[in-house]
Length: 72
Length: 552
Image (tube, rainbow over all chains, first blue to last red):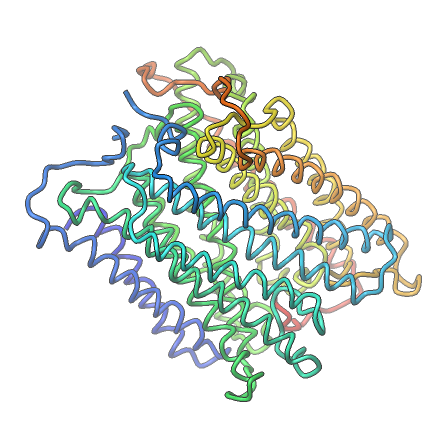
C-alpha cells in the first residue's frame, strides 16, 4: 500500500461512520444524508482499491513520482 | 528542463483540445447568461428597473442556476479533464465518457434554463410545492438537475482513468500532489452528482405520478448545496496550487506529501460539517446544534491550510529573490499577468468570505441571518471573488495555450479582477449591512408599499451599483479570455505571458514567512468582531427568530 491509498482510506472510513450515524439518527429525516455519504464511502473504497491494485497486478515498476514532464 | 503547463496544454492531442474548447465555450456561455440574470435581478431590487416580481424571479432563477450549477460545474469539469490530460502528457483515457458526461450536462443546462421561463420560476432549489401549479415546468427543472447529476457521475470517470493509467501500467508508484488532488476532486464530483440525483429524482417521479410527494427534498437539497459550496472551493485551492507553479515556478516548500494530506483533508472535514445546514430545522435537538456548531469550525481548516502552504512558499521564494519588508515581497509577484491579478483578488475575497461565513453558520445567528440579504452579500465574495476569478485565471492560462495564441489585451484584462473586487466590496458591504438590518433576500421589491425603512432601499441601490460594476468587470474579463477560443487569422509571434521563475533557485537559509499566519490571525479577529457586531445588532431588533426551515 502506498501513500495515495492511505490518504484515501480515511475518507472511506469517515464517510462510512457518518452514513451510519445519519441512518440511525432519530431526528430531522437524515436518511438522505446517509445515502449520499454512504454512496461516497463505497465510491472512495473502490478508488482506494484501484490505488492499491497496482501492487498486486502491475509488477515491480520503478519508483516514479509525478511523471508529468519532469515535474517531480 | 521542466515544461510549463502552457507548453503541456499546447501539446495535447487534437481531440482533447476540441473537447476542452467545447466545454469552455459552454461554461462561458453559462457565465454570460448568469451575469445577465444577476444584473437584471440586482437592478430590479435596487429600483433601477421596473419589472413585475415574477419576471424578477425568472432572472434570479436564471442567475442562480446558470452561475451556481452550470458555470461552476462545467468549467470545473473542463479543468479537471484538462489538467488530468496534461498530468502525464498522453491525453485523456476513456474520452467517450468525458464527451457523454459533457453531453448530459449540456442537456441539463438547456432544460434548467428553459424551466426558468416556463411556469412558476423555481429559483435554484426547485421547491416541489411549486409544481402543483405548473408541473411541466417543474419536471423540466428536475430533469435538468438530473442530467447534470448524471453528467457529473459519468464525466470524472475519464479523469480517473487518465490519472490511474500510468500506475496500472506499472510506470508510476505514486501520484504527484496535483495528480492526487485531481483524483480526489474527481471522486467528490461523482458523489455530488449522486447527491443531485438523490435529491431531484423523487420530485420528477412525483410529477409523473410514479411516486409520493417528495417531502424530504428540502433536507436532500441541503446536502447537494453543501457539496456545491465546497467542491468549487476545493477546486479553487487546487488551481491556486497549480497556477502558482505556472506563474512563479514555485512548488510547496512543505513537500508533495503534505500537499496531498491537505487535499485529502478536504474530503475528511467537509462531510461532517454539513450539519449546520440543518440549523433552521425547528426539531433539531440542542445537543446536535452544539455539535454542528463545533464541527462547522473545522470547515475552513483545509482551505486555510492550503492558503498557508501557498503563501508561505511564495514568500520564502520571493525573499530569496530580494523581497523586503513584511509585505514588500508581494510586489515581486507577476501582477502584470491577468491570471495573477485574478488569484490575488481571489485570496482577498476568500478572507472576507470566510470571515462572514463563520458569522452566518453559528447556531445562534443562522436563524436570524439565513433568510436575509446577508447571505448573497457574503457569498458573492466566494462565488465571484474567490471561485469564479480563480476558474477564469485557470482558463486564462489554458485557453490561449490550446488555441496557440496570446491572451487578448492582457494590459486591460489585468485590471478587471481589481475592478470586480471594487464592485464586490460595495455589493458585499451594502448586502451584509442590509442583512444585519433584516432586509430579506429572494424578494424583488423591498419597499413593501413604502412601509419598509428608507435605509433598506438605499442599501439595495448600493447593491445594484456594486453589482453592476462587478458584473461589467467580470464580463469583460471572461470575454477577453473567451477571445482565445476564436481561430487565429494568421500566425504571428506573440509575447510570452508575464511570469517569474523562482523555482530553480536555492532558498536563502533562515528566511521566514509571516504573511500567511498573520492573514489567518486577521481573519480570526475579523470573525470575532463581526460576530460580536451581529449579536449587538440582533439584540436591538424587536423580533425573535425560531427558524423557518427555508434553508439556503
